[in-house]
Length: 466
Ligand SMILES: [Zn+2]
Image (cartoon, rainbow, N blue to C red):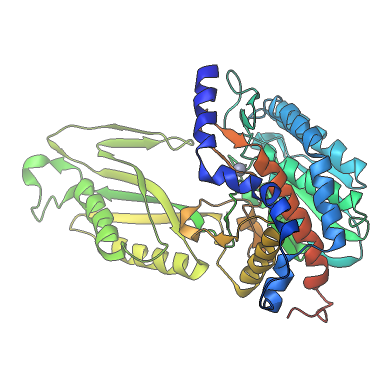
């Protein structure tokens, strides 16, 4: 394992992204030697070009607390908290809850009913009267846990479950809040932190599982989510996802009669016709995908509550049953509804002797790119450049899966990907580039302090938005 880590570190050293985290430090002496620019910069560039004295204090506070934050992350990673480990998830929640309480947050644990088999969520509120009410989103659970998933640090790379997805993002969030407090900026800000306990495998029903998050969004103006990020990309749009299930029934008969008027085409041909028509008529629309994950046809098909299919039949029986299921991902709710309508129409034109039904289940709503989202990105990009980090753009909504921020997207503008940079998320090889923890916290803290002056609170729309 040490050898594997060593290889990863060598890779990182050769990774251009790594240099970006060090850029501000490397550029400091150069910046000090530089004279005034030869031509006056545009107002936007001037805004981005420098930090105010307060912002410099915020940045320095992040740097001063960086080492202790790495230690907090180490402790968090060493608490196993796979989604199904209810005790572990709660322990990570307690660890972060204590950090937030020390900053003046009122914290509480929101439990889930036993039947959902989920630990619950940490909710922490810091009441204040200045600026927009911010909702900061994290999660406590990980995909993997157990043997081989403990914290192993070599130099500036740390491996382990949750290092980047997303205990690293949670710690960056806490570090940013600490820095704001150290610089005297947190006192009047209104911030709600929600760290869910089941982001990686969301508890059902969603109406209960995401109620706390949606409540918090209803009392906030903006959502900032700390899922894994990179130096140059954040997300202001994410696709929504839902699932579909197709069931076809047909007359069972001797195979010799297939295609005849009496026997019809059977369930298998009808099911395949439907899926093929989905593909032929709907593939290619930007942002829309519909994967077939499972299918079966035969004399008997059973589907258990976990979605597992069992099938039996014979080659000489025209199959009476066909079942298929999959997902549907979309950029907007309109696109989702339009796709569903087309799928239903296709199902309603069956081959002779068969008949099908399709049903849909909502999961994550779409988070479309909006002008508010673009304005958030602009302010975040300015904060990044003022700190000496690279300019920040967006990743295409179709390039990311859905996340917890999607649930609040129908209610308030949001931005995601403010967390740390790493690799191997959702695999046993997860790791984090530790300098990105400092970058993430510096950018988030300066971003939040700028939002105080540049974003109105609901009902107080008089603040200038330029
Ligand atoms: Zn995550």
